[in-house]
Image (cartoon, rainbow, N blue to C red; front, side, top):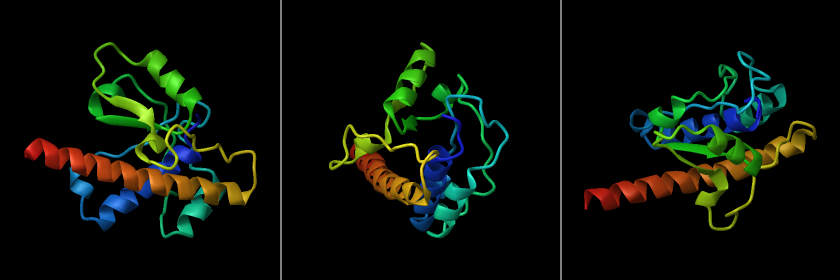
Length: 153
């Protein structure tokens, strides 16, 4: 919602994943919130700490709100929960080309489930969020790579 917990964590995890695979140049990765609560702000310190414990630095990320142009620039806009999914579908331009879906819909074991918002909970919630985001990000990358191979065939 505000782009300080889950979405910057997902951006950091996915960037880390594609860097490790040598695929950074093939992806445009960003994160944004559906609300303007924290525009210009840094990720939540607990999100930063949990990510850094996994070797992922998200401290330089800056909060922003989703823009109409995002639906044209990005191939996928992945969200963490149904509220954000509904918010984005309601503002999606008619000319949009981006696929808007739940991140965890790219997993088998968590299909249809949400990444819970850890903001009002304890530090453990941020670790759980990262676990889910890592699974979703890995499955998403596998899906994109499979589709790319099928398209080339």
